[in-house]
Length: 316
Image 1 (tube, rainbow, N blue to C red):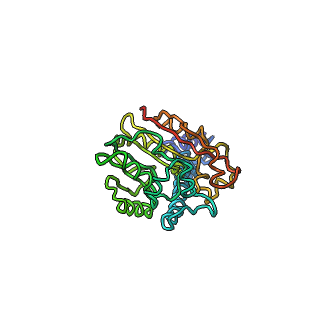
Image 2 (image 1 turned 135 degrees about the horizontal axis):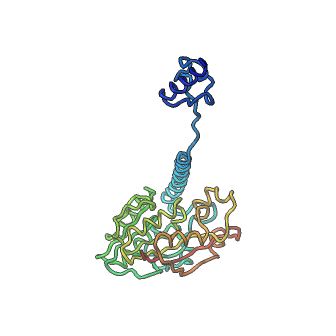
Image 3 (image 1 turned 45 degrees about the horizontal axis):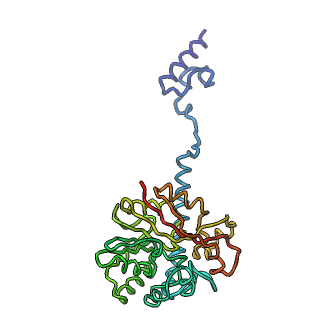
C-alpha cells in the first residue's frame, strides 16, 4: 500500500515538473519516493539531426561557391583575351570563335570587320545584329559585350536618338570596349561592369537584348533569361547566338576548364535551353542551327555542339 502511494505521488510530481516523466512505465525512479525523481536526471540527451531546410541551405551554399568559381575562371580567361587582343582559351583553337576568318563565316561582312577591327576578338558564334530589325531610337542591351563589336554595329543602326548598353563582368573587357568607343568616335554606347544574371538595368527599359556566344558561360541560365525578361519592354525581343549541346558531355568534358572558357562545358542540351526560355516568358523562333561549328573551332567531330541563332519575344 505504501509503495503504491509513493508511485502515485511520483507520477504527479514528475507531471508538474515539466512532464518529463508520465508514470512508472517510463521512469524506473517513479516507483520509488518522488525525491529521487529529479528534473536533472529526467533530461534526455537529444542528438540533433540535419533538417531538410539545413540540407537545402548547405546545398545552395555549395552551388553558389561552384557558380562563383566558374565566373572567376571565365573572368580570368577573358581578361587574358582582352589583354592579348585575340582568342586564347584553347591552344590552336577558338574561344567562342576563331578570329577574323571565322567571324566572316558566322555572318560578319569584311567591311564591318575592317571598320571595327580592334573590337573583333573572334569570340562569337554568330551575328545577332543580322537576326532582326534595330530601329532608330531603340535602346539595346548586349549580354557579354566583350570589346564592343556588336554594340558598335547596333549603335549605328539605332542612331543618335537610340542607345546601346554593353554589360560584361570582366573589367579588362569593359576598359577595352570604352577605349574602342573613343577610338571609333561612337557616342551612343555605354559599357557597364556587371553580371548578366543580375543586370544593371531598369525594369521595362530595353527594346532589344542581344547576346553572342555568352549565355552558355553563365552558371544559371534561368536567371539570365529572367533578367532579360525583366528589363525588356512589353513586346521586346532577344536576338541571340549561342552554343547548345546535341548530346550529353562526359564528366571529364564538363569539368574541363578549357572547354568551359571555349563555350562548351557550360552549354545546355537544346531542349533544356529552350525550355528555360519558355519558362521565363518568351516565345522562341529558331533562325538557324549550325552543327559544323565544332569542326570550324576545333577541327574535330568529337564535341556534340551546335551554334543556334534565335529570336525570343517577350510574351508575358
